[in-house]
Length: 346
Image 1 (cartoon, rainbow, N blue to C red):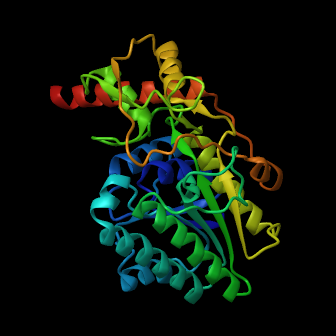
Image 2 (cartoon, helix red, strand yellow):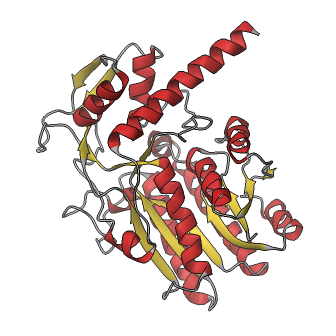
C-alpha cells in the first residue's frame, strides 16, 4: 500500500479524506497538533476503517519536528496538506497569526518533500481565492480578485508558493483543490464537523434546530438573487474527500501534464441560504427559528463552481444531493447530543 501523509488529519475535511484514502487502498499517517483538530475525529475515523491511524502531534511550523516525521516514514509517496487556521473573523483580527501559521507550515512541509524525495502534493485551497467573481459559474481560469480576508490571502499565497516550488523542481507535481462549501457528515455519523461555536451555515442551522442556539440569522435578504439571500455552492464532505484520492491517483498514475494544476470542487449548482434552510426543514421535519437580518460586511453575493475540469481529468463526480447533505448533518448533530447525554449519565 502506498503511504500518504495527511496534515491536519484530525480536522473536518482531513478526517473524512483519511477514510476515503483507506477505502481506496492507501496507507495513511496523520500529523495534527490538535490546536484546531480533535482526537474525537481520529477515534471516529478508526471506528469506520477498523484499524488504527497513526497521528503525530507536531506543530508543522517547527521544521525539526516536521523532519522527524519524514525520517521515520521514508516510504511516504504523497502529501495532502490541510493543516491551516481557517476562521475568517479571527484572521481579520489576528492577521500575523494566520500568516505565520498557514505560510510557515506550508513552506516547512514543502521543504521536507524536497529533502526526502516526496514528489506528489495536494494543497487544500478555497473558493475564497476568487473574491467576488465577474461571472458565474466561476472556472479555474478566473482572475483572482483582491482577497476578502487574511485567511483568503493565505490561500492565494499558498497556491503561488506551491506553483513556484513545482516549477523549480522537475519531478515535483502539485494539485491545488479549491473547495466551495463543504457540509455534511460521513453516512455512519461516526465523524462530522466539530465546532462548538461554528461560523459555517450548516452547523449553525443544526445547532439551532437541536436547541444549542435559541435562533439564527439570515444575513441579507435583499440581494439580487432569486429569493434575496446569498448563493453558495454546498458540497458534501465525502465528495470533497474523494476528490483528494482522485487527485493523488491522477498524479501517481502519471496523468498530470503540468507541474501544478488547479481544480474547483463544487457541485456546480448554486443554493440560496433560504433554499438550504427549506431543505433542512424538509429532511428533518423541524421548523427552524430564524430571523432575517441586515447584510453582513464582506459577504460575497453569489459564487458557485464550474466543475467540468475535475469531472473530465480526475474522473470525479459528486454523489450526494443537497437533501443528503442536510440529512447527514442533522443525524450528526443528534449523535453529538446523544454522546453528550451518555457522558453526563456516566
